[in-house]
Each structure stands twice: as C-alpha cells, then as structure tokens.
Image 1: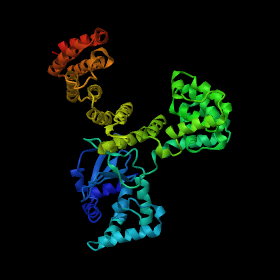
Image 2: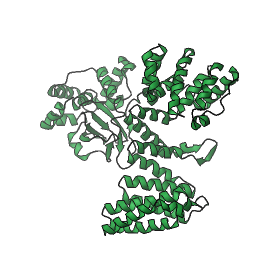
Image 3: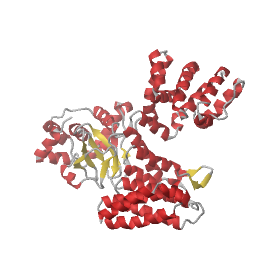
Image 4: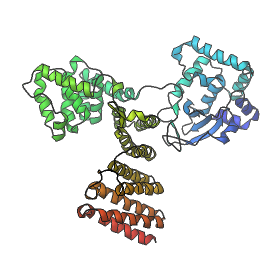
Length: 508
C-alpha cells in the first residue's frame, strides 16, 4: 500500500489537473474538506486529500485505505491505498454508478454498464487520451473494467466495521456505499458452526473445549438453534449440563428447549436438575413438565417455548442477541457499528418503539438498553445520544427524574459539565412539580439517594474543573436535596456531602 501516485500528483501540476479533470479527483478541493465535520466510529485518524465537484471528499485512513464520502451521507472504502483508489477513479470515471455491481453480474453486464456511462461522458469531453497519459505517468497498468469493478467491490466490502463514518456533531452514521455485506448473525455464528460440526464428528477435544468455554458454548448452542439435526441429542445434553455453570442465560433455556424438542422422557430428570440449579433457573424454566410426564407433554412445552422465544430463522432474533455475542467474541467494533445503525434507525423512525397492540404507547426500554450497551463499550457519545432520546420520551415523573439522573451522570463522565448541570436541574423540576403520584416517596428510596449523590459528584467535578461559582450553586442545590431525604436514605450520602463541601471551600 503506497501513496506513490499521490506524491506525483502533488509534485506535477499537469498530472494534478488531469486527475481533477476529467477524473474528478481534485487535490485543491481537499482544503475545503467535507460538507460537514466527520469522524470515524473507530476513532481512527482521517486526512482529506482530494474532493470532487459534487461535494464528495476522499480521505486517507491510518492504514492507507481511501474512504470516499459523498455529499448525500454515504461513504465507503474504494481502495487499500491511494494508488489503488486512483486506479479505480481513472479506470472507471463513472465508478459511483458501479458500487452495486459485482463480478457475479458477469462480464457482459459490467462492460455494457461501463460502456454506456463512458459514452455519455465522451459526448461532453474526452477521457481516453487523458486516461492513457495519466496511467502512463503514474505507472498504472491497463486493467479491464471487470477487474476494476471487482477491486472496487472488494474495497467497499471492507468498509464495516473499521471505516464507518459519523457526523461529528450528531453522531449518526453515513449510509454504506455499495454492497451491504453479510448480516451480523452470519459473522457471529461462523465459529459456532465450525464447533458444531466438530461436535457432530465426535471430536473428543472439541467436546471438552467447547463445553468448558462459556463463549464457545453459547455460540455453538445458537448454531444448533438454526441447524437442527436428529442426531444432536447427546451433544445438546452435554452442552446443557455445562451451561448451568452460567446460571440462567438465554442459551441455557435454548439448550433445554432443544433437548425437550426430541421428546425423550428420559431427559426429564436432567431437565429438572437443571431447573433446580438456583433460584434464577427455577424462575427461568418455570412450567417445565415434571418427571412422569409423557413425551407429548414434554414436546409441547419445548415447542411452545421455542415458538415464543427462539425459532429457526436467525434474522428473527433481536439485534441485541447478535451484538452481545459479537462483543463476547471480541468483535467490539462490529457490535458498536451495528448498535449505532440501530440507534440511527430509531432516531429517524420513533414509531419503531410503539407497542404493536397499543400504538399510542411507547416501549422505550430498547433505548435505555442501547445507552447501557454503548457505555459498556466505552462509547460515551453514542450512550449520550441514546440516553437523551430515552429521557425525552419518558412520561411519568419517576421515569423523567430517573432518566435525567442517568443522563447527568453520563454527561459528567463525558466532561459535558454544563449539560450535566442542566440535566440535574430538570431532575429537581420533576421532584418539585411531578404532575403525578409516581414520585410520592422519592425521599425514602434509592432514587433519592442516587440523585443526591450525583449532585455532589457533579459539584466535585465542577470544582476540579475550575468552576467554583457553579460548584457553589450546585452544592446548595445538593444540600437541599439531601435535606429532603429520610435519615436512612441520607446516611450513606453524608460522607460524600462533607467531602464535597470541603473541596468547594478549598476551590474558593
């Protein structure tokens, strides 16, 4: 991966002018940058090196890959180096119209598509002599349009997860330029499918290693969910016994269902033993047939639970199933990008949150879950996006106060101290004028204690940030909240309150 061609363009004005016209790779436009501030979701660096006359920008990433972002909100990798990207741009001057083409479309279709575009270009200006001159000067070989389309597609498929572009202010992702790539579940299940095949072959090492590894065990059980075979009963029993070590997981319930679907009443003692592992499993596997039940009853229990919670189509699973399993396998960036796109979809279409049976009621839990997922991934900007929308949609006073309290904490941790002050002011407003009875006893419960603690923690942050006047004002508000708490709720906050007051006095 080199930038040999880019150096030549920067050194030779004639070559730079040829690249800019007719091939629309204009170095001079790099100074203008993109139409909006952008950043990579991965946090990697970006350098704008060229632009085009539609407002698009060519960026070089840390590994030398070239990311193209158009002015309409789509972006994709078009080469693993500037040289490779320029070969595409020069060899396929209409490349933006070929991002959905694939070598699988066949040579005839590709050549016809390229010929149609280039004939239209030639009606206005020349490209053939210019292309030959530029290729020769930059040392590029003459490649067929079919090969270049294949290279473009390969590059575009590398865009996710490492090169997803975000609007820097709003945090939303650019659309993917070109093919979508495999669904997340396919990538997540790949290792599980391999392990499942080894188990079916009777690989004793695999039987031990998969059963002992909680992540491999979960992935293999998911693979078995979508690839069911009559001969799997013994390996399913094996995985079920070991999954009890993780207590009540979705995969433990899945393993019990897959075993139960075989309808072997000899498995009832095993299923009962699993159910009685601890309190959580007893609750999670409630309704299971007792020993002495018939095969039909066992099969019916498993089938009903399967239809309600699992099924055989991985596309029907909640996206959180796959993002959790991706994170467990170390595919952090892939999980993050998927969650960002999930949040983007919800922001753009909040009707996705409506209950199917109650269209006037919003189920905002997925937003709260997204905020928690992003926080666990260490992505506070995305956690804040999700939590802000979640807070804005809460209806009861309790939910508003709780959501704004969490928002204030995230804003404080992200260094957005003025925003955190405003969020705590909104919490106090909810406490003072709730509008319903949901906060009637807030002074006696953990929510009141948490709100007081966050007031003091933010006061400390303001003092440490050299904002003494704001710290003093918030300390007054914190003391007022503390004064409202019951003695029992206030007990654990007083040490923090005293330490905060001392720090504010020290800050002047």
